[in-house]
Image (tube, rainbow, N blue to C red):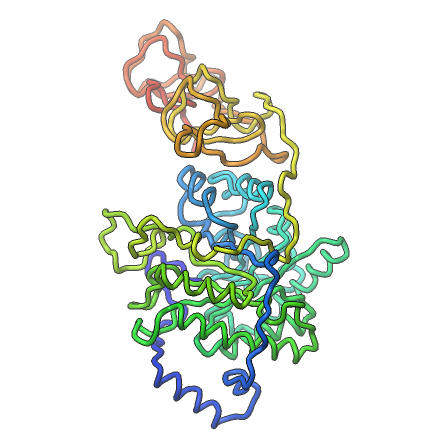
Length: 515
């Protein structure tokens, strides 16, 4: 999937697809060769329709973890998503650095510290929500290209799997990486080894392959990616087609019609691949191996717009055929662009580019998709509640006698909350009589065993004078209290500097954070 930052990136830059060109392309391939690829492009008999059982039909929209930071992302749409989430994208820290990162922008520890990703993923697990991580994407260096061998690559994958307690991964392979045979071989070997480890421990690992797709199905390079995994003995849960960016300029057919053509062509390609490798199809047949991911609203190709009606049509087709997995790019974009956005015809990472009239693409695409990967029971309700203790809690324990500014985090009844606006002496953060809109607090997730106790930054003794209740302080004065430094924002006397930790609006002090 593309991530447009700062310039638009297309999976098929410069490609334009029209019906005459598509027909000519198909005829040319048939005349030139009677190979397997020609048979794949023009299948003689479509696989029978059965598909995944309802319990195995699941929805999880892609969520770009790197788009925002700190409190903005921590209280973002991920907590309000319909269905589950595929967190994107884990890539290498550098061209030759096998360390997994989020989009090369954040380490895994950064993501936990800045926007509570570990906590939010654990919340999804405990609420029984499907969650997966996608490796790769359209930009940056994919781990399989950066890691020197299959063993180190498996170790990088394992780090992510263990940290987020995952049993579903998504391998997003596109662009130049499709033709990187060395990376393809390393990836297949590493994933096969991980599945063998999990199988020995009686733990599943579903592996989904996400690939570019055209109205005639997978490209030859895409088919080779499928073959590589199957040849290595990987149990492929399915192939997710990127039903987007076809290169039509919006003149050939609706995006839903093109997507339905693409999925219809994909089915016999996968049936043929499974047959070539002597792998049995699932009980539901080939359609239970298929996923679909449209790019909602404006696509990267000018003129291509996936509308709300397209979402309804694609969902209806998917349900009729038993398509196992539905997704979308992306949850971050599932809203109408605000009136201050000056370029409504330019693809945005934060909105769909079309008027949604209060509807959400996620709700339309996941209609009927209430199952789970493989039909497995998820970890709903799993995990111990850790008792509130000011000495061990990762944030201050909530008190009705304190003042809280927007974006302040607290602990209450074993959970972490973030304030949405300045408040004091209000209902408890977990007040069951208030809905999300009415509460001053957003629930982020449970307190974790891995959390470290909340502490204020400490300065060397004597760095600044100790604060005194009787001293008159002016703007810019600096003091110390209990080892922490504070700077006066305006004139004050007798007001404790440490109140500023929770009340950033009205305290005359601000905490000094060491560089």
